[in-house]
Image (cartoon, rainbow, N blue to C red):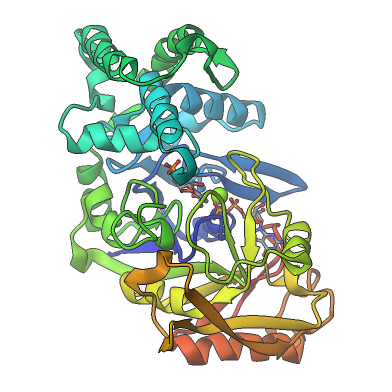
Length: 431
Ligand code: GDP
Ligand code: IMO
Ligand code: MG
């Protein structure tokens, strides 16, 4: 068997969590391969809303195994909170959740370092979620990180204290008042204590050699779906650097973040919104600073699932989408939040950029240059409430023209149309 992949094609928050949840009954294993609690994946069913940060979005289906792969980074305190939330929703993940011993740990001091580095950037802030993502991946690459497997060792606390001291020394070099800084409302000392206590929850989980776990499952003929976090435009190599996250969010991240060979990659489902959003700083060529952008934010409830920050909104960006399709080898497109456009008279799509006097239909190195401007085509809106529609035949003609335009430009079929946040609001064009 091969590993299918579902990932975001824009700047994150494309609706990946919802679609993974819809797909889960078809898979034996759902596996996260990168990122950490900077992710916020929302699922809605039976009138309830759940937001997951570290735990894969297949967790609500007890027959499906969920794996946190080696490429993911875990904050034990946030993880414990997630487990407790699931428990109070009647879900006991300890039976179907597996965690890689090679996944790295986010320490409280990584969160301090994230805040320190952001502060020191002044006007050039990334707009990080401040979950300690950059500093944790930095320590991983620097070969000095702590991993989940380390918590089983008797010398863990000693290793932890050494690392903490080392980070605190770095922080001393900066103008940063530790006594005034709060992590999730707690002082550093309080957070540090809770973090160490939360290690017990992690120890009680099924800790595995995840690369063997996945490859053995594939050999047995089990089906695996890899769930991406963030989006292609936030990829460390190909995103709008330096305004990116610190992992490979693209399909290659599946190979390194789960330990599967490239020829084992199967279908690649690319999820994108019918428009664009971005949280945090960095280039966003189609961003709308006017009342239309405001209308998109209102209609789409565009506020971050992890930080609550308002998301920046703009029209669909085809050069960026085509770039993401190329990098990921997308076989199937999934368009979400189409219902958010229900009330618009006209819907714009950017099909190329102008840079100086040069036209560009691709995503260039110069993306950070404010001289780069979008060129739009305008399509007629459908002006119909589509949220109760469940079959392709009943979708408005103008909406299908919008879909056909995207398919023609990208040369990839749109296999699923999402018309609302609920599990049931999903229209399949192919099985
Ligand atoms: P993720 O990070 O890619 O999983 O996406 P988020 O959960 O951060 O953000 C997507 C938001 O859109 C969530 O609030 C979802 O419940 C919601 N959502 C997903 N699909 C649709 C859709 O088709 N229509 C509408 N209106 N909302 C959707
Ligand atoms: P999901 O999985 C949207 C953004 C942050 C910031 C940049 C770097 O829910 O789609 P980091 O904390 O990683 O150092 O932040 O990346 N970012 C996201 N934006 N959705 C996400 O995840 C994101 N994870 C990180 O806002 O601009
Ligand atoms: Mg999200």
